Each structure stands twice: as C-alpha cells, then as structure tokens.
Amino acid sequence: ETGVTQTPRHLVMGMTNKKSLKCEQHLGHNAMYWYKQSAKKPLELMFVYNFKEQTENNSVPSRFSPECPNSSHLFLHLHTLQPEDSALYLCASSQVSGGSSYEQYFGPGTRLTVT
Amino acid sequence: DAKTTQPNSMESNEEEPVHLPCNHSTISGTDYIHWYRQLPSQGPEYVIHGLTSNVNNRMASLAIAEDRKSSTLILHRATLRDAAVYYCILRGLMDTGRRALTFGSGTRLQVQP
Image (cartoon, rainbow over all chains, first blue to last red; front, top):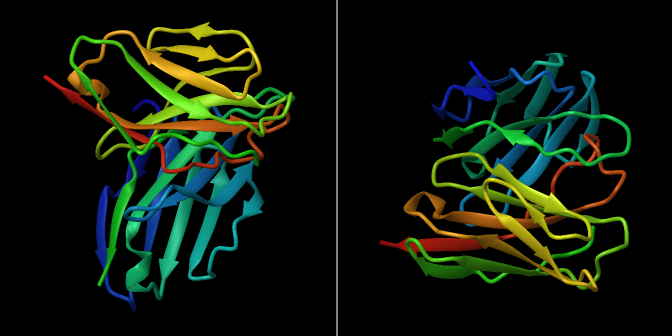
C-alpha cells in the first residue's frame, strides 16, 4: 500500500448506529487531518493531529470523535449522527519540519450516508 | 487567512494550453501560493506551489505576478484526465503541519475532446 488509504470507501448508517472511519498513511508523515466535504460546499477542516496530539478542533460536534493511536493511523468514531452529516470525509497527512510549508497528501475519502 | 478569488468554471479543448487564474490581492509577504486539484471521486492532490518566482514541475507551471496579487496555473497541454476542480490556496510561512489548508470553491475545469 502506498500513500494515504481510507476504509471503508462507502458507509451507510442509521442515526442510532456507531461506526468508525479509518485512515492510514504510508508516507512516514507526522501530521494527519480530517476534512469534511459536503455537497456543493468547500472542504472544511475538522481535526488536526501532530505527533499523535490533537492540535486543532474546528468546532466539530461531539458526535464526531477522533483518535490517533500513532502517527500512521487516524480514526473518526461516529455516533448518533444526523442526516446533514452525510458527506465525503477525507483524511490527509503531511510532514511537519521547521517553518517550511509542506504539501498535504489526501486519501480517496469515505462517502458517508446517514439515514 | 488571506482570501483567493477564482472563476467558478472554465472550459478547454484537449491538447491545448489552459491558464487558470487566481487573485489574492491581500496576500502577505510570507504567504506561499499553493495549487491543489480534485479529480472526480478522489481526494485533492497537490499540484505546485511558489513564493515569488515562477515554478515548473512535471504537472504544471505557476506564473506569479510581480506584485504577487495574482497568479496563474498553466497546464501546457490539457488532457481529459485534467478535468477537475482546481484550488488556489495561500499558506503562511509558518503554516506547517499545524495549520490545515483552507479551501475555497475552486475552478471547475472541463476538457472537451
């Protein structure tokens, strides 16, 4: 496997379900991100992790719970979601080093539908 | 974050060059100009970035105005696989992995055969 992988690629869940999205990066990066892309809206940041520590939470509702057990893996735990949470959830990674601005590498995303 | 302005959509013919404009009149002296693109049903991918000088790589060229208030992404020969949404994003010098990308609406490029 190379780059950033996400599983599952598609997920349909009811509002009372609990599910998790998984992201894995094979690039040796030390920062990982969750973004949300709703229909007809720009991508928006949800969470940022640096060296396994959460450094940004973009006012995301508590029904979304991230977990970063190590610098290669990132999870997004979902519970009691609403239909408006249906979207494409994208994971990304990048290398943090000094003051340079390094590019981010994105996974293919998980298409989530909440019924 | 400084804001960028891009046309909503553009069309091109296959095998012809494409110039995708971006205005960023409030850019600061330490902001890098990044371009990403998102192909259908995929996550965004990095294309190119620059600070002041024009930049070339295997995917595209980036032409930056002398006053840095605008830039142009150039695809030298568009192919059908270049049909995507192209995003112009500014990132500050100290925006390492601790700062995420701020996406706008981008330019949807359609390539006609």
